Length: 136
Image (cartoon, rainbow, N blue to C red; front, side, top):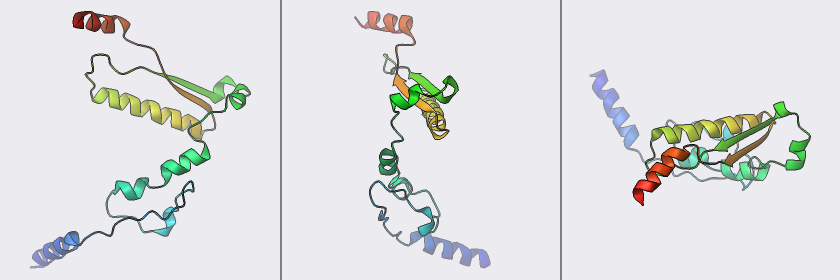
């Protein structure tokens, strides 16, 4: 009997409409996470709101070359990004690689290092040439 009542209560709660999220953080300001209770599940609109504007306003996506010149080699981090696969056959490994590269770059940036995450050159030149020649 208790299990039945518990299931009914749980079902009633989950069927209630969730209030729509309204972002109250002024553009470019850091979101205050202490002002609202933690949600019971991940809601992308609520979680991700305001972070992009704050990161851009804080300069987290840029690297000042003059400031980087004054840093030691240990305080610099550069990663060359391979271009997309010319065959067009992308897979989970490509997504994982990009996520790891991005995470490493952000981690070094948070450590105060001068970071540069640059599009690179073809890392599979012979395989690419073979695919392109077959297409021609």
